[in-house]
Length: 467
Image (cartoon, rainbow, N blue to C red; front, side, top):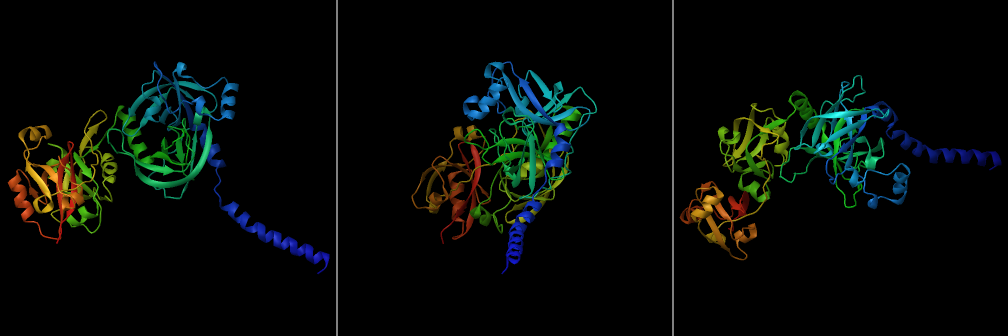
């Protein structure tokens, strides 16, 4: 092979090796247009409090890398606890000055300052807040501002590229990209409320990003960055954003009246496991099991009962109990919706007029925990619940479990001494005699739901009887 042939061969091989890299690079998303078009509508929020508080937006110099500490020292340093300042992000949703951010960014603020990318600053008025969704609506006195477009719906798919713009650790207008890791994540609050089906991403979100927008590749806002899971104070690739359906609902209500009212059903629910699914006649674990119905609430008025398994609400399937609060919360109060339940192993459709849950109301639509139990042939010693227990629990009958025998059906199911049993299968339990009669009627090898109260909280468990 002559020199020219060898050179030509080298060029052909080199091009062949480069081609996959070029194809791969061309398939990667391009973020520049989204950033250039939308950055002017993303704002930095500086909040002042009358007393120092631990804010997610405030950088802690002790936890910063050395180069970041030097950066802040060069710029005069971040706000200190003595300054009583907190930082966050937000974005403009209308040209007349409405701005969306997180509730926890402005909660308890004495003053809120909004800083635009062109370095203009405005004092902001807090129009309204919604702690349940962690959203707040601000307004500044300005016109013809750049604004962002909210996506029409929650059409994101897992694996789709997304982009965040915000001010992590006070570093203005930082951009981070990643993919959607999961949808519909339930992160109950400290009050066990669960009204937000969070978007989980691996975008690098850090303190100070709170309240900033999450974009799809069309440059539309699909979420508001709200929470991170971290052991170090920085991003580890577990970030959570409030989906645009919740954002749009809350913003519209805050703009119209300064407060939020969401749908309320008036039930306590729990998940359905394999044993419970079998005992209720379901083909697989699904739905939300009603553990307790609030007195005079929408559910009770519609005829829902403890022991019903809600499998559909307003035409939307309920794969798990955590999905029900997300759907109910977005329904306007006084709306009548069909609710499909499984009762006594039969499907039944009820019409429910959804109630309203104001921002300050304490009603909950929470999830219970799983458990188990039964007696006699089930391996439990029970006695009729004393009147003082019934009064304290607000019930009119039941039996208290005094002992659970080892290796029994009750022990396998997780029944504990002190549990108060109120329902065996579909039989109400008012006394020890009623309990014995109900257990005697159970068929060997069957699966039976048991309703009990443990530490003041009602729950259902599924029992698998021996043949």
